[in-house]
Image (tube, rainbow, N blue to C red; front, side, top):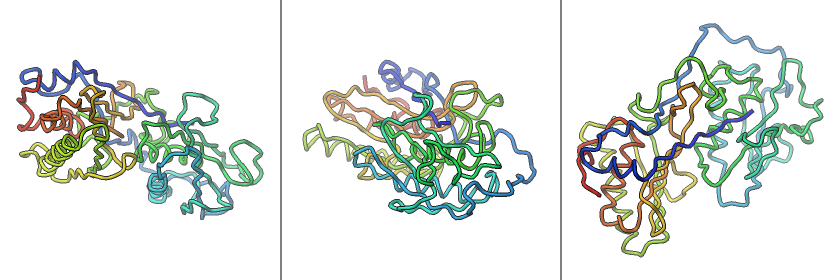
Length: 338
């Protein structure tokens, strides 16, 4: 059915509290998240279906972008297909190898990105057909199959980034592979917030609360003066250097934060301007019953133009939460920014 992204908003009062020395070093009032892990493993080899609904193991995948935006979904789609090429043998109901050809004219699968998707439930962020062992897609007459191509519908609204779109595509392609909700891999296939019984570790319980340690950062300062832009960008680079160096032993060596020139391709976006209230807005996913996030998929940091002169402190303290919610390194642990 769908991969729903859960949004965890931290109100300004909480953020300012966290930025003032003595208010409580760790942001425990914020939602938690962590690297996703499977809750159960059978230890036995998965039994494959006798035939594939495509009647072929090699599957060509095309992209249909209807968003009229500047976003390039190629990398997100490629990463999703790479995940399944590496894991289909273990989890898929039939063997498949996916090959991305964005402009293919006769593909087996079409990833259709849209700001409004035609799915059975309006709250879904994606949908795709789930075949059974006896399904043959060539014989299916359905809105999910057009001219012999299976249509995977993926929502791509303003807040999505490459990571959200990748995870959404991984989930929906899992359905195309015959997987239903709550099948393994559970952290991929469970619908968000629907109550997996066995708790999955939250962000606060892991050294890096993302699926990987390589995080890309984009700085949006278009509404600032030239001098203010330089201050925010220089402060951001200084913060990144501090965390990449290990933050005095408070961050693992594998953490790698890098500036990029594309907001869509970034994991963390820093917004600064006169109409921005300093704060933080993390996005992530939760599939167990505690409603806390298991891992982050995006983080927005906001810096008001009046805070530009202290942007190193503001960005650094907020970056502490996004890189490890339960640990604030010394550079930002006792900052007075109120």
